[in-house]
Amino acid sequence: MNKRVLDIVFRLTVFALLFTGFAQMPIFARYYLADVPGFAWTADYYLNHVLHYGLAAVLLVFLGWRLPLAMRRTWNAGGILLALTWAGVVSTGLVRVMKNQPDAFFSPTFVVLVDWGHLGFVMLLGLVSLGRALAIRMKRLS
Image (cartoon, rainbow, N blue to C red; front, side):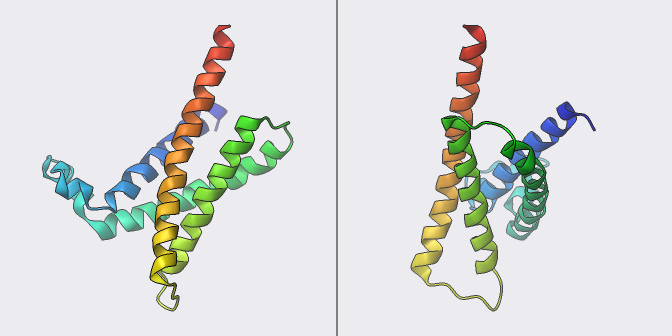
């Protein structure tokens, strides 16, 4: 596959992860998106949970494939911030997976911190990615 196709698949994977991640919160049923024809599946927590796990595995393959390539380059501040944000998303996501195992027990306070941390890192990832894209675009225009 060429780089453009992989980039599109990566972006679709990230979008689908965002969609299924927000679908695990009951906002789609609450705001009647699940009532739109073809979107009833968005109210099914278990389906979205399984989809999110599968997409997360695809994302980990992408990130694992890109990491050795990225380590060869020189890093600027934006790249470091983006990498740290991805590390935060992945690490809190892995803790959430461990939390969902039947033999694992974490305190309720820790669970809330990890859940909010995961959501916070995802929001920060969006902001950092948008900032980097705008900076690259402004650099090309000047």
